[in-house]
Image 1: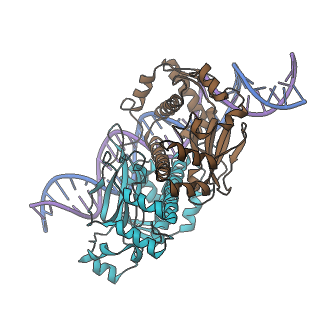
Image 2: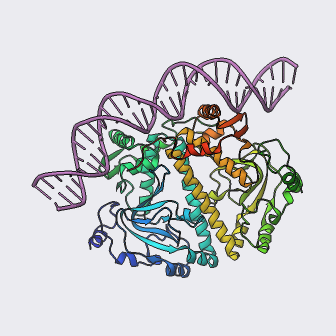
Image 3: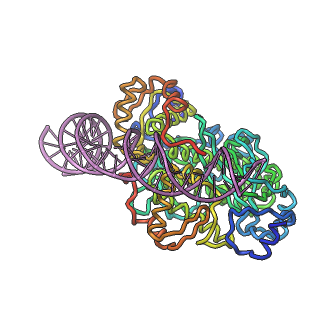
Length: 266
Length: 266
DNA sequence: GCCGCCATTTGATCTGGATCAAGAATAATC
DNA sequence: GATTATTCTTGATCCAGATCAAATGGCGGC
């Protein structure tokens, strides 16, 4: 299987969107042995509690590009954790388009927004072959009731998601196109780094279209700004392959530097 | 009880921002007698469990316009529920402005985004004299561990907040200024109605500036669109006093009608 | 390897809403 | 009640980024 050789030969390569196939063995890794546990639900749990959590986690077979993990309207049963690969979640717009709500990398949890109505209001679609852990929510809720630290971890995760959405609101409400792209690239960079991959050299698993949609920009704008960043020596773009050549300069773009769009409030 | 007489004498008056003074008695109302319990944490709890929740809730003295409930950077200790009045929450922008993140009406919970980092990342400021229940989070977490339905209610609340943020992302990412205002007005209308107030006649407790900031628009745009809506017979605006004259037409503005801004995806 | 489709880039033009600039209406201060 | 400071409205102008239009380049399918 192709993935095994890749993983064995080059465990640190920043390959995010390469056409790799997931080895079945990868899927059998228990939470306690999972390299993502520090990013995921088991974070901070005792070994015993981690094992109890592990008992309810289902390790599904890998999904492939364009597969749906779930669709808007589906009944909510489980949360999902990305183990390898990448997904996007998006909400259908009443008029027929969609709003990309997020991209999900290994260790990230999908489906938290569906707990309230017990209904998925957005869809999740696979961007590149992905292995995904399924956590039936009813059983998780039973478990959290008896493991205080897991309960707290769940509260934290839900809260973190709110905090993230809040940052996005600020981004969409106040930042220029350039700043949005800079934030996007740096966010990807940091998240990949946390997963032990390169912070400055990676492959995009999403299209320019999806990036634009996510950031509230037209495809053309995304493309133009990528070119501009490249001209300015901030990055090197080759199709899906991204190299960030000047992280500090990108960070500077976000903060006080580039005057952002709309007026500042009273 | 003051709340009761108000409800009895004029249950439909849409007074949201009038300079009313909160009776001290209002503050003593236990959760089980609170008219907001159906919107708030106790929702679905048994009478006994509600009482246990009530034991940990602190009823603070009323806060006045421009008071801070908490500030960005404060240590997180408690969640807050608006009992009467209105608040706004906002995040400071790195460059010195702020992004209004939400307006909070009676029955709504503030502070969920701070659980993760145990730090408030946004500030909450009082728009009009408000009575607020404080719920120390540590004690709430103890309680949720022993009351499964309360735990579930907490999960639901957190999830609902995520869902709400998601809607805002769609609004800021894809909708025109007109649609944003329509969504804003209808959202207020619906929330007031849930609280037993008029859905079509109310007072705004926030400035045009704050509305614009919240919706990612300039003040001038807010003002202009209010005038336009008025010219079109959709509403009647007099300073802070709003009367929605044609709810269906406003709703139509949101959906398929007005072609919205940015392109539809892939 | 060849064909056709889709994604991406680049250029030209258009426009919604920002920004600038005054007034007008209210509210706060003394 | 006069004075000053806000907030809100309205008009004129500007511009970032959308939209339109085309050329180019990869890639999947066969």
